[in-house]
Length: 392
Image 1 (cartoon, rainbow, N blue to C red):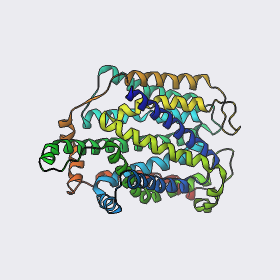
Image 2: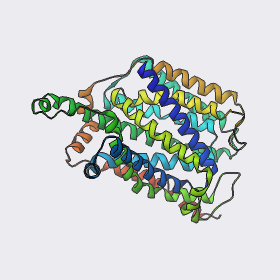
Image 3: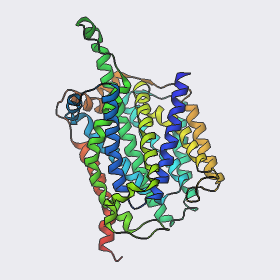
Image 4: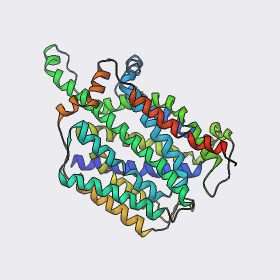
């Protein structure tokens, strides 16, 4: 019963988060880069405040964690990429495409979970994952025709949105690996700590909050790399908007607009959702958390069908989009009916496990993942570079 309640809160918080993303991105389509930076910083400070107020964690302890860049910088980079790519692309895409594409990260997460994290997948669960991805592709194909944007524009920003989904997937996988290794070490050391009178039980919520606090502080730095993509979105805005100057990137007057509530809603619900997802990934797996979130995607779709919403947000009932999202939800429900099992030895022996084992011990690591992530940011600069060369 407790797990069911946790999954329900997880779904509702995801629905509110996704709804907040859609509403604030369509309300402030030209200011997404600024809102991403503010979101990332405030997100980190929110977790920091929770650690100080609830867990009585001192600032010295938090600073000590911040110095552990080997553990948190890569996760921060992936989350930053996730935030930037989702919020800049969101104004160009219908809600139905966003809902279904967000579920396609399950393929990446399932592969890495199975291949490196030691998660055991039954044949039924593999079919659930494949069906989710196929339904996602169908969702883009059907809804690209009903979008206000040109088909090519819709597919371009869908690809950008998909990068956000994969970046979020990698962030969740790294979070899962790091937390599981830390938990395993703590449980292994527990008898010795008991003997020495230093009882330190594992607190999953606290560890998730520490990780998100520090990783998002690093994410603020990586957020600067998303500026060129934001400039491209300003120059070529959605079909119902006019091009804007680069000054919109630092237009802080938007924080005095009452509609900034949509951004606050996104921030608050993200705090709840991210905390629960971290705990689910530690106890079960990242793919389990993603599949469990499919009900939240369905609730988000239902939210925008409410007739009393402002005209800018209310969307007509789309039978194909509704049916596809319902199917994804049913498939996700089948997957989450049984918990995932894991092989801790496989995680420890994998490249991901060795990477984070070295990080925990503050030993040298490969910088390849960080450089590859920076490379993805560099590729996102190409549209504005090409647009600057070609005639306006």
